[in-house]
Amino acid sequence: MEVETSSSLAAVSEQLFFDGRLLDRRVEVCLAILGEGATISGSGEIVTLKLRTLSPNAGSLTFGTADIRDAENRRLTVQTKEIEIPFLPTSFGLNQNHPNPFNPMTVISYQIPHPGVVTIRIYNVAGQMVRMLVDETKAAGYHSVIWNGRNDAGNDVSSGIYFYQMISGDYSASRKMILVK
Figure 1 (tube, rainbow, N blue to C red):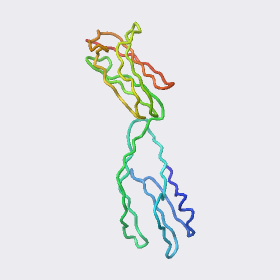
Figure 2: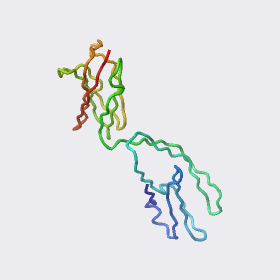
Figure 3: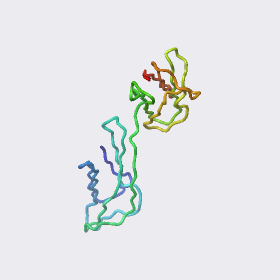
Figure 4: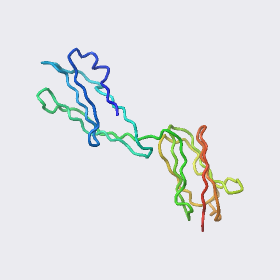
């Protein structure tokens, strides 16, 4: 994690004390202007937090309260709101369906690092398209779709090996799955 002061604080002529760190699943930022009568006035950005995810798993980061105090350590009233920032994938991915083998349905999960058109198709072993599961623009993030073992006409398909393929931009990947009845 990196914590940087805002460029607006560069104009402060007094000595500035600044420290930012991660403590017990909280981010703590300490900022003080040293000197008798020194103040920060106005509104705007004070600090920038730059965070790096340590795990490729989906998750989110929630910002909650701010504790801002004056020179006498009295809590100041500030407007804050809780926001949630989802962790976004940094690469495309098509995961193995689960359960596999399956009956009567299975989940196919995938990820895209930026918004774009995603198509996911199911093929039989002869290479014939059985079902179009997804064909639309998706937001960046982690997604999943359920296949109920039916073709595009709504009929149950027979037991056997099937392949599913995801295409999004230049990315293409395929996986094998087994339907057992």
